[in-house]
Image (cartoon, rainbow, N blue to C red; front, side, top):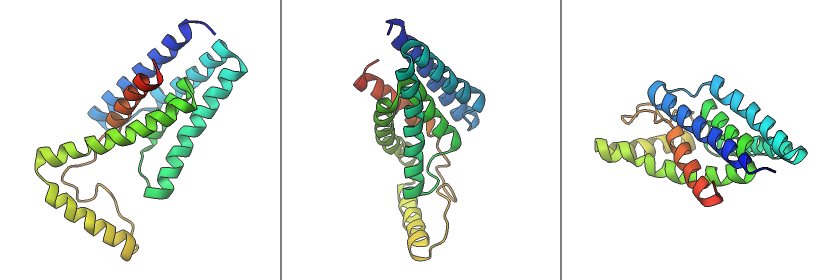
Length: 176
């Protein structure tokens, strides 16, 4: 294991997070031409730097990212978009399963804080609480499918911002 390994992998992860957040905020998309090459590069570099153990770290990191997305889907419905899932997979391929778990935890916390921004900024808290109550009634009592952003005055928020914040906190907590 060389000293250059963490800096290379972390640099690629940071650049991927920044580019993905930029395109998600600006265009509402996280592109495959960013995520897929980063996943492959993460696997190749980890293999190069650490052999079979590095390969296993990348594969298990991607698997943990998909398991987190699958668990969220079973619990909440389609909570994450495809680009968000692949961005978490990029973090797994580059940094491994432990980092993905910490990043997912901090992403959830950051997402909870960031979701409040349009509520406070637009002064639509009462409307949102009524909308939440109606959506819960439709989903739980009437058993109707619901769309989270349907009729929302706040609009769909780019979740990559929360992923970026969660990953930055995980970099700080787990180590750069």
